[in-house]
Image (tube, rainbow, N blue to C red; front, side, top):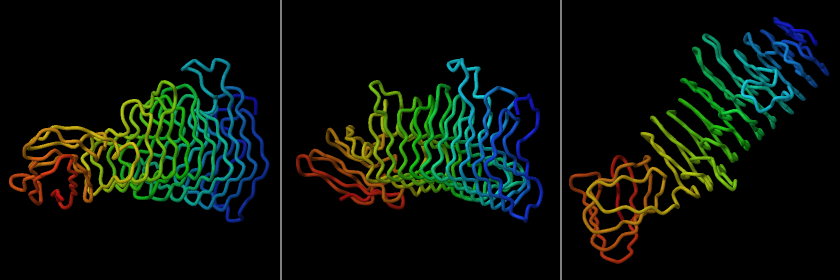
Length: 383
């Protein structure tokens, strides 16, 4: 390397490679790209080191394209050091993309360590498809952009399953989200299991039109935007995640933000605390969804006055102190079937089944009486 290459790669595997090539212990310096797997199948790479020390028109650490399939990468190291002026927003780390994937299927990464402007970029171009991609315990560090981008642009979009298992995703100083997933009609599944997403100047996780998304046992912490923002989408599962800000002056605004139209969201056993504004900001129109057992959301007490229509708080609270007496005919803001709310009532509160969405009529008679409302099929059942 060490010259200002415009297109050269250290290793370029092109065409039908049915012979199952194995590439081991290759080191590149300051090239346009480290390695390019192009329309090739059954490729194994071990010990690839891509070093980008000088800013010489570097583009890729590793590029995968041309409907390549059945690829295995072990001990992949793509590195560009922070420049001497590391606080300047115009500086970069000399490598645009650590990993770039398009039109490929059956890819496995293990022992991956990436430091680049964008760590991992998975893009499905028009007419292509990205199938199964599996990352096992990668370390992804970014200086001035997004650590992980998953984007379905073409037809038939992103089709396969993209899994990140125990990734450590960290940031430097620029204002970008940590992970961005633009589903755009994707039919496969995107999963982050045991991820640590921390230190970003914007949202930790941001998705638009997310389909079949799972965040499980992840830590999303100490970011300067929201923990996780989910706008539109369906089949979203959030389980056993820790979403918090433990800094002396918290900056992570909301733990979870929901917006647009969200269908089939299941949030369960998540722990949210220390976020600057609240654990949840729910602005979404939700159907067939459930939130249960989330510490910092449903267990947060809210207070509201009795009125003919009442609207549940957007912070996700499902334990509500009612003040005053009167009649409630309509409860707005149900998350979906099986949504359950506990009201702490004075005597004389009437849940009236006439003229609203109450399934039955119930009147409180005792001081500090708990009333449970459960939503099912468009109505609240009171007991």
